[in-house]
Length: 312
Ligand code: 6CS
Image (cartoon, rainbow, N blue to C red; front, side):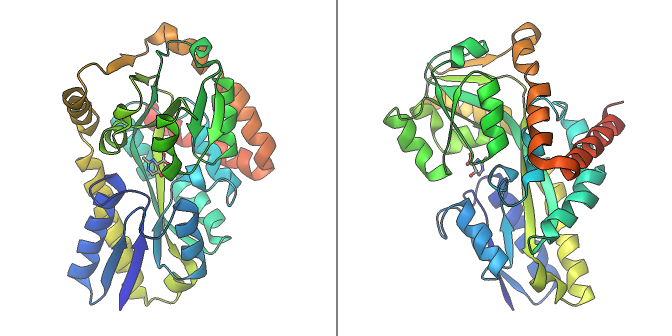
């Protein structure tokens, strides 16, 4: 049988590398084949999610940045400074988190989706046309965010004018100055040539890009136990592979950007400069709980407990 798997990035970007490893494992360990659909072949993130829910696709990778309206609790990933910056701690968190491995699967299941895994794609940095050293510098900056209400909230708290847009409109939006900033992991800034349409890259340590891989639930439930185990094993292998693949990726991507554009300015905000950004976290957290009620609060509390387990 041929299974269809769509994702939000190109084949050689992080989600694509994960998908290729998954395909390799499935095809090596079963008679099934995986057909991969990279970004752009089936539409935007919202489109591939619909296709997965309706069963046209068996597998989909959609990051929580686009899942906010479907599963409001998934917005928890946009509370700034919640995730640790230390890569080992972060990886351990994704491996062991009860919120991620037990609670989120139930919420995805309610939307007809079998959540297979979540994994980090790298520290998110801002690319802008003017320097950013404080929230004041974001004043009047129309800053593109993924279509996620809490991300809007968080950039508002950062002092910007958040502008939710699907990915396809970002390069052109920056080029024509409809927006003046956006955020993404360094590998994505490099591969999508965001440095061509912005001049400053600023890392404030406020987040790491999380993504989620899922299957259509009816499809998954209909698989033999043997196939379900085979799929889960393939996901596990791809998970290990993608964490290893990302070692040093931030740095090599930076080097490539510098080579392509020597006058690009890179800034890592220091402790003092981060403070006003960090101070917004509690208000964004409050907004999250307001949006999601008891079930959101439960997820947030569990995530904090899970994080404490890996950072102590
Ligand atoms: O910013 C975005 O919309 C995109 N960023 C990444 C790293 N992956 C896919 C997503 O569409």
